[in-house]
Every structure is written in structure tokens, then in C-alpha cells.
Image 1 (cartoon, rainbow, N blue to C red):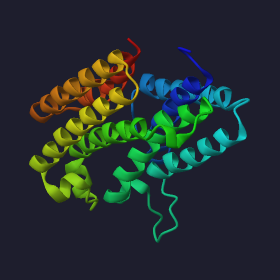
Image 2 (cartoon, rainbow, N blue to C red):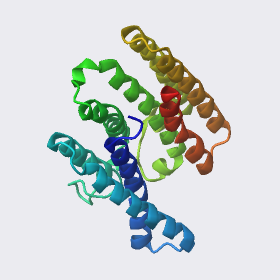
Image 3 (cartoon, rainbow, N blue to C red):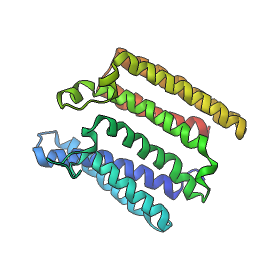
Length: 238
């Protein structure tokens, strides 16, 4: 099925989670952004909320429970709700930040579909590992983008600890591991189109990482780094 209830739920959740911090930031700090941006944030937030409600409707209770847990982690990532002194966010802990992001996105895009189609999770270990490795490489790339901001806030992420050069080496290593796992997946369940899509995605992601290393900017990250996840989905479907 090209578009399922789960697609609507995941896409709506993404809109909701991405736009909530912008709305909260505007309210708490009274930022003077152009009104058209605020309108877009509010529109996308409402659209995401409606899609989440529609996506959750009639889902099995087990899947709804998984979604609630994912939602808690997603909002705890940027909202100061952790029970520590001067309430902390997940993103304030460098090691926890990348672990939670990788786990949440892997669960949303790999484990939930397996459960949705009533399959056994243990039957698809390589599919889950594939997604985890790929998401992890993107998380490292985004941590590189935020390296200076994180340092200013005393947040020591992986790039802060191992350095930029080793961080890019890690990205290339994880992409190579992604290719190797894709080949193993192909040997288990032959699908040349799926393998070609994974190889294409690995190449594009490597090129994007190299481009952003030379020309980093918020727009480039939004268009390219965020975009490679969509490239993977489209490449596999084609």
C-alpha cells in the first residue's frame, strides 16, 4: 500500500514535533519573527496534530502504546521536563541526545511498520539495523552542525569529544556499514531494486556530508541532510 494510516501518523508526528518548539519558543521568548513564519508554524502544527489524531484512530492498542512512548521521548528532547535540578531536556546530554534521536527515528520508521503489518520484530533484524545505522550517520551530521552552539551551552556531543575529522570518518564508516548490511539483506530477501536504492542513498548521503563540510548553512542542512531520508524512501519504492 503506497499510503497507509501509519504513513499519515508518522508524517503528522514529524510536523507536530518539528513545529512545537518553534511555537513554544515564540511564546516564551516573544520573538519578533515575521508574521508569515508564525502563521506557517501554527498551520503546520495544527495540520500535524490533525494527522496524528487521524493516524492513531483505530490503530491497535499495542501500536498506540508504542506511539505514546515515542511521543514522550520526542517532546522530552526539546522541552525541559526531565526530573533533574533546573529541569533538563534530553538534548542537554550529548550522549543521550544522539541515542534517543537514533532510537526514536528507527522505531518510527522500521519497528512500527513491522508491528503495523503484524510481523515479528525478530524476523527483521537487518532491516532494523539498516535504519539504525543510517539514522545514526545523519544524527552525527546534525551534531556537527550544532557543534559550536552545543559547546557554548556545555553540551558535549560526539563531535565535541572526537573532533570534526573523526566525526566525518565515523559518518563514512557508518555509510559503509549501511551498504554492507544492505548486501546482507539482499542475500536474505532478493530485491535488486531495494539494494540499488540503498546503494544510491549511501552515495548521495556521502556526497551531501562532503558538501556540508565545505559549505555548511541552515538552508543546506534543511534541504540536503533532511532530504536524504526522503531520498532513501523514494529510491527503494522506485
